[in-house]
Structures are given as structure tokens and as C-alpha cells.
Image (cartoon, rainbow, N blue to C red; front, side, top):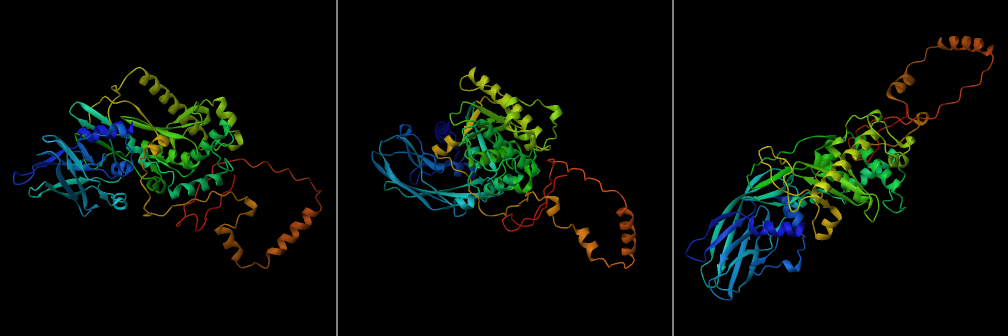
Length: 488
């Protein structure tokens, strides 16, 4: 999917910016998609390895490049040099080579030296000027400048249009999955403190029940953190040729406790992949949800409707499948998260199975409803399953964390009530002045109760798992744990 999409996009979706003059070599500058550059796409495709069989002799330089020129070879074996500059986002980038065949049109895209760290922090759309300089043979060097819109790192392009044709670039969503994000380890520590599981083992035991239990532990954590569905998907720029969606980075979803369908799915998949469970994204033109495999052979699969995070669902409203009931016994279920987890599995898996059945009946594409942007018309595009493990093997990179925010941690450690420190009100009472007459009443009461027969104390009831509401700390969890949580 990645190789095909990148090849098609590279082949005919770059927008012509302007033309050269007759004083030197005539060329056409090519600048991104509809003169737009998407940092998420640039990062995602930076490491893509295309199949050797896809090489096109008329395309020179970076096979996934978005900036370049089209020009016609004036003679056989003509030397050419193309330089692209934009101080805001790159270092000067040069391609030097030979135009082999006279009269052939070549597309030349130098390997651009992007400042990827800067791109990963680009939060708002802004104009940038790209300068092209071309020297062909002994002709005079020509220069052109094109203004492009550099989109926010949160803008993810997933469909490109060229007339009636559409290219699906939804693999770019895989760049927002970041299993190596430093916040992920901290979340796993919090999940262990919730005590649904005592450790994360992935597929090591070979038991599907344990895989389900680990998946529930992660869902429970996100619910306990009060991460809720937020339908924010709009981007700052509208385009007739590029369809994109706003996607939060993992740190923003975690610290702001908000997630749209893509945000929640990439966060969930990042957590699953970190603990060694194979997971994927399911993308349709108007929705995204997540899925995971119960076994290493990928014969058993569940999908998860992540928009149900934070939904108020009770066990009375759901049917608990036997497999889930066995994997997650009553004593491990949290009232605020278990029912929504079951509902999310049922809803997501039904949608996934329906999508597979629909895909089996169609070939390359089919009308599947409106796109995420309300202004866009329905398009024919296949439903895509984005296997993150496959994307990583193909070279699709995650957007690296840039240390721009601190982790907002929660302390979910369970402290028995008898060991809990005194509350603020109790401490105030202990500091209050002593009333010298108070002991007289205590002594009188002691004499009266001494004459009463002793009775056996009633046995204490077993502690019952109840919702534990987190307290937010001002610093990262590694620095200090602040909350004390008790079972009711």
C-alpha cells in the first residue's frame, strides 16, 4: 500500500508552480501538494524504501521527494544541477546528474536536507518561500521562487485528488503512532498501579485471555485518566485537491485528556505495540478505529471503537461474551471502564468484520460515504487497514517527541485506608488546643461501658473495587506521587 501510494502521489499529484524563462534552461518548478507541504508526510516518508522494480529512469533524485523540477533534456547526456533552498525548514539541497536521452522530460527531486526536528514542532500553518536554481549544460543558471503553505504537524493528509482520480495516503496516520514515545512507559507504569494486571507480557504466555486482560488494563487506564472523545478534526487550510485531518500528538492527547477517533486510536495502538501486541488502524473516509491480534499467527482479531472512551455504559446495557468474562474476572473489573471496554470491542469488531465483507465484494475502490471534511464530496476509495508493524518495515517513521511538554502524571497506587496519611481536616483537629474537662466525660463513659458484656466484633467485609478518581500533580510522576486512593 505504501509503495503504491507514494509512487502514484509522486508521479502525478505535484502541483505545477511556475515556469522558467527562455534565457536559460526552461523548467517547471514543482512544489508539494497544491503548493502545500505537510511535515507529517515529510517525516513519515523520510525513511521509506521503495521496491527496486519501481525505479523510473525519467525520475531522478529522491523517489519520495515533494520539491523538484520538470525539464526536457536538450541533448544526449546533458549534465544538470538542481539546487533547492529554504532557510526556514532546510539546508541547501543539491542534485547533480546527467539527462541521458534528448527530448525526454525528466523530473528531478533533490534529496532535501529538511530540519526534521523543526518540522516536528511546527504547530501552525505559515507561508515559506522555496527557491529553485537550475543549471543545464553550459546554459545560464535560472532561478525561481515559489511560496508554499507549510502545514501544521497536526495536519495529516490522507487523500489526494487529481481530476476524477484519488490516491489514498492514509498510511501517513502511522506516523502518529509512536510506540517509543517516552510518555508511553509512564502510562504503562500507571496501568500497573491500577492492578488489572501485575505485568505486561504481550504474547509470551500464549494465552489469549492474558492478551485481552492486558488490552483491558490499557483501556481502563485511559478511562481513569478521563480521556474523552473530542470531535475536533478540522484543519486551518481548505483544499480541493488535498484532504487532511487534524491529529493530536500523543503528548497532547494525554495531557489534555481529549481525543478524536484518530487520536484515541493512535494512542491505543502505541500502547499495545509497546507491550508487544500487534495492532493496526482501520481507516475509512469518515472514521478511524483500532484493532489488535490475540495471537502471534494473527488468526484471532478484535477491533476497538475508541470513540467510546469515557462513554457512560453500564453492564446492564451490554452482553458480556464468554471469552471476555473468562479473561477479565469480576474482581478485576472497574465499574467506570469495563462496560465501555466490552461495548468498544463489540462495536469495533462488528464494524471491522463488515468492512472486510464489503472489501471482499469490491475491487480497487467503492463509494463509502463522505470524507472527514464537511466541504468534501463522497469519493471512491478502499477501506484501509494500516498494519503498523508492516509500516515500520516499509520505513514509515513515527513523529519523534520533541521534549516540548512535561508529562502530567497521575498516582494510582493503592494505599489501604489504615495506612493513609491524615487528611487536612484531621491534621487541623490534632493541632487544636486540648480541653482539660474533656477527659471527665471520657472517664464516665468508660465506667458505664465497662459493665456491659463483651461482644465479638463483626468480621470486616472484603474490600470491594470501586472507582478511584485520580488527582493531578503539578510535576511529572517520576518526580513526586501526590494522590492517595482508597477503596470505598
